[in-house]
Image 1: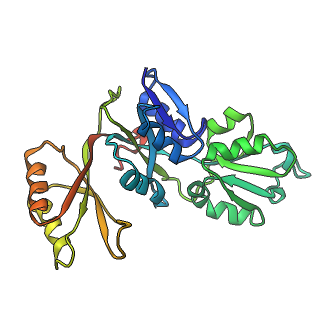
Image 2: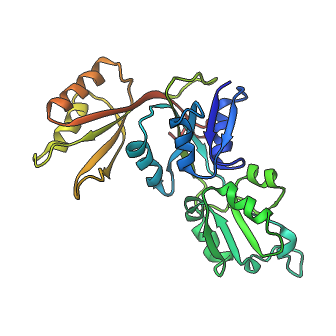
Length: 294
């Protein structure tokens, strides 16, 4: 049975992998920190790791992207999109108003992952402006902390699964600033994995590092894809961490790495003096209710 590392039980990562696998038998291995999720597969303690890399509201998850690029060398095997539906979770009896409703202003501290709390700024500023925000490694960890510390006036931002896992109440549903809040996940591992779904697309991710002091280098790189009519679904610059002002470009191409056109494009980019690293060529899956929008 395949072992898959991910953030704690009840997190969005947990909900997302259950959706992707659709009942396929695997062993889920939970870790408190995303670094431990990565290292689990690096060290051979698991076959795959679940990594959230991009969100509709907050964009790229920079820490995870940097780990994927700078700290590990494990290919992407699958990508999928899953809705990040966040709720305010706690023991509702601690915050009851005289009329029996929940008085959010009684909340003293709210625990969550920084990305999740950033997705809920409008709700927090309106209903719990005095609450202290405490960052934790995952939404599920925040819910767990609240469960283990009753009577302190603490709450958490988390998922439906996180609420049921730890036996707490959903005090406010769907508190994100925007309804169209989705997270892009990748599954990294050394071997391909069979997914019991039909993919919506095939994607190849590459890193391109430009030669120094070559005017128009990025334009030349993009032109190699453009004239071949290869669609780029994402291009993002990130520092190489080697020299100030030195960047690599993370590029997603909607084509397979073994296609004639993409193979030729990569060869041309390398001929321009660029360094190219293949991060993976893999199927992409889209959440059903989003198919008409993506």
